[in-house]
Every structure is written in structure tokens, then in C-alpha cells.
Amino acid sequence: LNIPLYLLSLNSLDDIPAALMHLCEHWHITTVHAHHRHEINEKRCDAKVEKALASIQVDWHTYHDQTILPPETVKTQQE
Figure 1 (cartoon, rainbow, N blue to C red):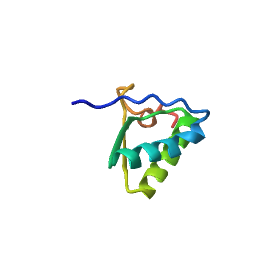
Figure 2 (figure 1 turned 90 degrees about the horizontal axis):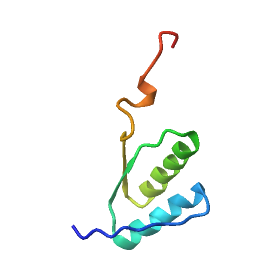
Figure 3 (figure 1 turned 30 degrees about the vertical axis):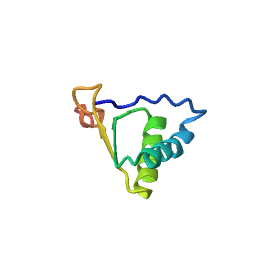
């Protein structure tokens, strides 16, 4: 497929949306696929990424790849 791999070294999660926007614009990327992250800071970052990419008409799709069921769907009898 000859798809290049880029490794970005960023200072914080806040830098991710702009960095991805730049890559998408540079390479004319129209859709980004990523794994779904469950940690609260990462979820907030992903929401910012989704909003930033939408502003440049880039689709954002995440997938549950580390769990059998999405954590939000598993409930106890007390919930």
C-alpha cells in the first residue's frame, strides 16, 4: 500500500488537534480512523480532534479495539 508512517512528538494533548489538521490538509486526507480511548483526558482530546477535523471537512471514526464490549455498556445491578 506504500502508506507512510509518521511519528509526531508533541508537548501535550492540546497540540494533537492542530497537528492532525495540518497532516490532513497537507496530504489531502478526508477520513481519519483511530482506536477509541476511554481515559477522561483522552476522551476530551478526541472530542477536540473530532471538532477540529470537522471544521476542515475531515471525517473522524473511532473503534473499540481493546475491549470486548464498550465500557459504557457494562452495568451492574445497582446501576
